[in-house]
Length: 438
Image 1 (cartoon, rainbow, N blue to C red):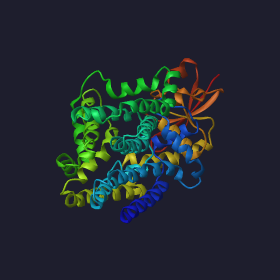
Image 2 (tube, rainbow, N blue to C red; image 1 turned 90 degrees about the vertical axis):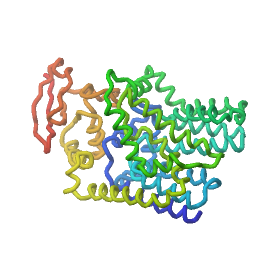
Image 3 (cartoon, rainbow, N blue to C red; image 1 turned 60 degrees about the vertical axis):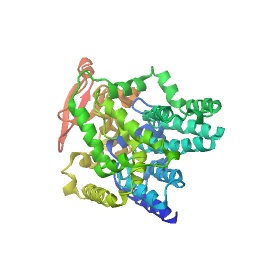
């Protein structure tokens, strides 16, 4: 176990150092803004990611260490996995599982990027551990804790709800109904509802807006494109890695954790089906990955295949890190360049006030890097958290707007007879506009 603890600690230190050095992405900055406007929940996602950023506020003077509470929570998923596996796998298999997680693009390097995925994976893994406790100990406490974990997971990301049908399928197909202590099930339901109450209350107060948005975002499209399904399938094969996927499909695990099969494959199957209704983002099935890696670690040939997996993703990680810190390489990729581009652009927030931006990504990044509030102009892009703020509509008779030249402006500006003047162009394709009201 000392070896496992050493791997856990060294990898944590590496994550903390790198996460402090890498600037926040636009989405992270958006969640950081939420942490300065704490609510029970939010239109786009539940509140856990904002709560984690809030805990890191005191670390903001230390580069980007505001990420650390979330990174630490995400890294504790590894500790939960060790606890989960210690009496079913030998130390070698647990070590292989750790390497599969640490070099996973989403669970390894990706765990330094603070999104709702970090806490939902933690609570998914915690719920798996507590489910094992429920089946083994059959105590009221384990049922209570399982409900609390699922409720908190719902405060992290709505995808935690897939835990319930996966569990039902396990009991149904494995004929394990007799193992349930039905007298304690109400305790699980009650604590689950109590711990997800912030999300329920916010949605009740806001006409279920967040639930409706997520359902439409994930399931409603007027037509079908084959690329939705093909990109999902090939994307997941690439993320999991072909040999790791093959090992997981062919592996056998001890009967006491047989439920892992259901928690590995059901989320992947669910999002495969939804890919016929809408485009599925690559990270959505992330909750399946810890269980998929458990299955893969159980395969007798995984030690041989692991070197190819680690080698491949190590090269990718080195390339990404090099691109982040070497400007000549960074500028070849729009996504990698974006945080640095917005960081440089944020200087105008100190020169022009009040300053607005044309998207939540731009507003949040300018706000984070300048530490000066920059709001998104109401109605200029798709509805989001910024549109719910009173500051989204200028209060005075003059304001400034920074946007990409190709983007338009909301119609209400012309309807209210605001006068537009271009102040200056900002490379590469940003423009600063002044609006005055007669």
